Image (cartoon, rainbow, N blue to C red; front, side):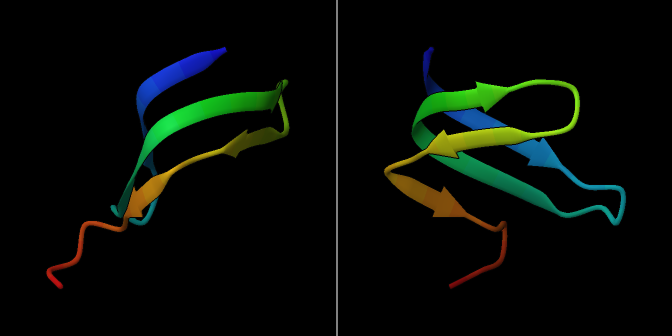
Length: 44
């Protein structure tokens, strides 16, 4: 499956945003994917 944006929210309050995502493995314990760009929400 391909997605334009994937956001991951952690229990510590951090947000990771990935662009142009292709899922490789998606089950209850592992999420594996390829992506073109990533942001960790921090100012650069």
